[in-house]
Image (tube, rainbow, N blue to C red):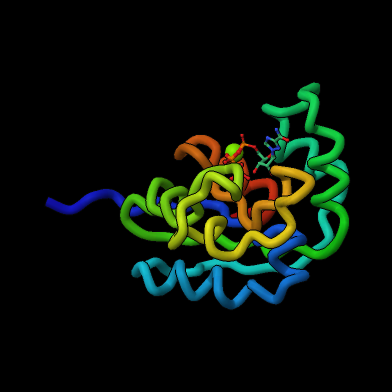
Length: 142
Ligand code: RTP
Ligand code: MG
């Protein structure tokens, strides 16, 4: 039985770019058998981040999160393949890098977690609906 192919939005956050971890994150996606089908390096605007993080507007960490995400370039990528949404969440590990298991991207690569949960190297969409919404924001027309 074949499963439907999915797409997910992956972000290498400013801490990951700063620590030269772009290649390592993309390597792990490809090593797991997924295709990178879109790629862009940019400093996101407040407007883009407000839409991307609309579920978090008003939470205590929201302004710190947006400030951090604008602190330098991020890499936006679309990864594609069977069950890639859940698979990338598994590759990424727990949101809090201290709790993220060794072997996961966050568990292995997070360096700046001393002060904030925000600095956890990557983002990955959490559902098919979020993935299509987020891909539309970061890659208009895709
Ligand atoms: P992401 O969206 O980045 O893939 O991470 P996630 O689903 O695991 O976490 P989510 O709950 O969606 O939170 C989005 C990002 O906000 C920051 N965060 N900070 N208590 C805090 O200070 C806090 N909680 C969340 C993290 O950067 C998280 O990835
Ligand atoms: Mg999330």
